[in-house]
Length: 597
Image (tube, rainbow, N blue to C red):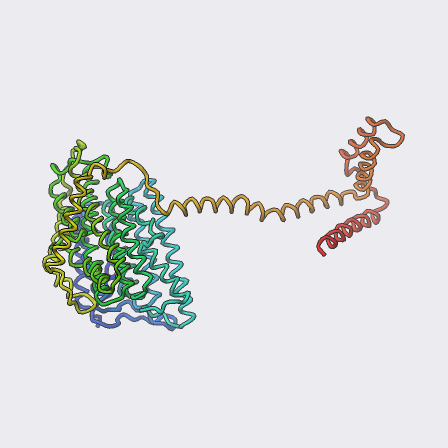
């Protein structure tokens, strides 16, 4: 008897039924499928399930513990919210790609071996790119292709590490990895690509703004958080990740400040928030790992809400740049209010979800006496509040009136945003609902007087700075160059080098050989006459004429002789021609041997 089915398989298999349904039945099915998957989670028992023998190894599709369940819960919740938000979309392909993408992310979460993890990892990459390409313009096609190329590179790195590990250990089991071997570094590289760790991050800020309005919501939820999950599982306590994460947190905020596109700003903020999680993974303590899991959970909810709010603006206003927006609060008050719940959550304002999750990681850095990390994470938090909760809503909904006659988005989009907003407030007000599903027992108390006062002070000081300098924080219609500029230009230079100098150098021996072959063929047509022509030419150049002939007649005679070559071969002395040809080849060989030796 089958008690439960791997939830990723439920979503992936269910996606194939979408094209066969129409109208209300299809819309009901799109919402019912995540609900069925969520119910399936409650039947999953701790331990290993769905182990399938394959070529002498066990493929485990059901590795169940508190860590995988925490990610499983929020992934399925986000699949439901994202599909509710996309319910008005008529294209079956978008829904199919979204469920395939979400299902493969769930497949990674419950994989107990590297082979099944890799298969789901690649399905996630190839299905996610269609959520970008469905925008159907040149920018999305180019961004999707770059997204695919980067993730193929990451997948190949992961596969190479898995193969080396299999050869060295004979095991495909997915779990904590010993650090220091080539296999672990390649696997880490593959994971870090999906986590958008600089300098491997530009695919995210490049692709997410070009995705469809609904596709960006799904993309913001799964790829980077799946990478956080596998890093949690395999590389907890790897100290170098502390510094990668702290740098990410500040880097993402710094680049978000330069953006004029609302979704590009939110994309860079994903990099910043994932930086907190990477730093927490590197710390490797119970508090930091609980904080990473909690922050990944809340991040999926509030970042999805933020992308839904930005998508609602783009859907109704048709614009996505600060310089083209403004004054929308009059016609989109519900969107503004729901967006602000996400903005206050990501900013770790008390009584919102980010306050009870992000602070766990920051506190863990203080407990580990990592003062520089604590300072960087605190600065990044203030920057997030400045950009997402102040700058973006001010210039989008307030500021100078753009004159755009926008309106509230469809009801299903508002309902999805409302549900996400409710969960962010619920977790912020009652954090036990989140803490009870974390991988380790939680004794952290977020609501202390000191913590609340300290947080409010930072937020108020940041708000004061914004309102004093808001005119200088207005974006300019410009392009900000990221690190990817280096390898984009570098790749062009590399391709030029391959196609021009390197290709020419590779062809040079071939051309020389062909010239020699052509010459020998020419010489073989009449070797005796060829030798005579060379001898006559030498005499003419030495004397300026042939003996007994004037210069002009000598030149004319030589010219005609070359023009008429090979002429009629001398039939009386074929052996002589062969001897001459052999002597020439022997002379060439003797010269070559002399030069080389």
